[in-house]
Amino acid sequence: MIAPPLLEIEDLRISFGTRTSDVRAVDGVNLEIRPGEVLGLVGESGSGKSVTARSIMRLVPMPPGKLVSGRILFHDLDLTSLPEREMEDLRGSRISMIFQDPMTFLNPLLTAGEQVSEAIRHHQGLDRAAAREEVLRLFREVGIPSPELRYGAYPHQLSGGLRQRVMIAIALSSRPELLIADEPTTALDVTIQAQILALLRDLQHDYGMSILLITHDLGVVAEICDRVAVMYAGRIVEQAPINALFDDPEHPYTLGLMNAIPRPDLPDIAPQPIEGSPPDMAHPPLGCPFHPRCPYREPICFEDVPRMREVAPGHAAACHFAGRKAFQLITSTHTPAVS
Amino acid sequence: MAVDVAALAIPTTAEIIHSPWSMFWWRMRHNPKAVIGGLIVAFLIAVAVLAPFLAKKDPNDGELADSLAPPGQTYVLGADKNGRDILSRLIYGTRTALGGALMIVFISEIIGVPIGIWAAYRGGWVDETITRVWDMLLAFPPLLLAFAVVAAFGPGLPKAALALGILYVPFIARVVRSVTLVQKEMAYTEAARALGYGQGRIIFRHILPNCISPIIVVSSIDIAYALLDLAALSFLGLGVQPPTADWGTMLSEGQLVLLTAPHVALAAGFAIVVAVLGFNLLGDGLRDVLDPRQAQR
Image 1 (cartoon, one colour):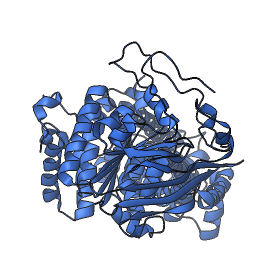
Image 2: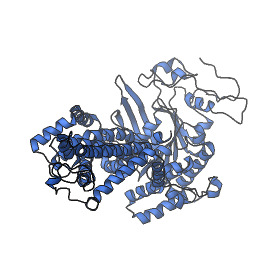
Image 3: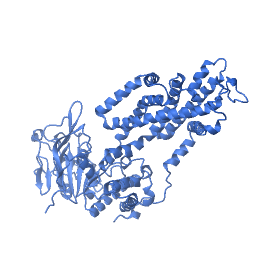
Image 4: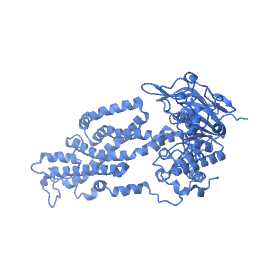
């Protein structure tokens, strides 16, 4: 029995107008996030994953951005047409967001404690003293040591990991139903990354919220996600439960991403980059957007845009050959032949 | 909560956390320009406040018999044409000069800061229109426009200050606009929006405080210009009106007797030079102190 989705994105298309042409950053994304799940949104830089996430919060500057089509349903509210006033009430209270670089996303002139306290007072109407208590509680909860001391610290006096914990404390302060995490660990070093991911996983469990985790790192996805959506050139190309994705990737792009990960368990195999570079979204290729880089392409790929097809329950891919061709993960030094 | 603090490998030792104020004072004390400028400005403010105690004689009460008396026992800096003590007039003139200059800068800020922020935050045609209007204002020599205003509304300190204050709006608004443009694009502004804060809160609580240091620097330099422009207006008889003690009017009176009694004009001129220098040095020093990139050198 699948619960009704918490957030449903339907046919979202967002373009950015430039002087000469329109760049289609998000090109028909369909996505749903269920209550209490961690959904990973994976893709290269420029694949449209951040724009998709920001459009949920309606933080995409318009202009130059333009909503071409689509709806974003949060419960039964359409976030694309909600009045700004009501959107402000949602932001930071029912939907929260944490960002990549907590240094620049915290106000340099306010102490860590004040910034959390401000969010609490703004959304919950607590007075200063009660908010302070709540901040200290949150600081303990997100694992900030000596919270009283950190309360009065400015962002530049905190380490990257602590700053990200402060951001998380701010985001969690009003117990959101959905937390959007935009590359939350990219700016951190590996050990801190693991701590922050473990923290997010724990908090997700305790708070029962859903998380939309945006990342370019399949390793991060493997660590905490329940389901994964892979984005390429503004589209979702594959969507699957976490195990199905890693066991049986049904889109050559997903496979390419996996082949690009260093394999400490298979030291003979060098990571294999995906040839070429993502398409220029002002002039996207005809047919499948991935065909210029695809080692499995066939004539049909140059002409027809593949639709999402379900290959197993909950596992869909936008490839003409999904479920029909066996895409091989590299397990020897033999590389797949390019046709 | 399942997070084990000990396992997080984050140093828990208490760090000494410097308050921003103590950092500011430390840098100020180690910047010679800021120290000298600050001392001059502090001295001028003290003189203005304590004028009744410092001046031995009534600045407006003259002994005609002592007209143009040279510096000496009775009159430390001599007496002017009407036999008034120049030192006392200089001391009381500090009040008019500083008060007038502060009024000018205050007026320009009250109008200029919101306009600058608004132009930058709204962007688009609002920004275009506002910047064109102040470009036009900047194209005129400020004194010329001040003449026009005073000619239309009549002379006097409040009117001259108001006229100059409005003419100074572009100077401050320009700076505020450019720093707001930078702050607006900063990530924390986006984070503030993601927290559901309204425009007013974002502008006044998050953007404005980050624009304060350039505003302070520009203000102190603008005070120096305001002192000069106000003195110039008074010199021409359009600003402060006699018999009120003012450096500009003293200079103007002294000019008539420059060859026979140079001390009248010299004293007022010297006061203006010192005050302008003081505020300029303070402004320069503040810029070094408040701009971390400059301070790193």
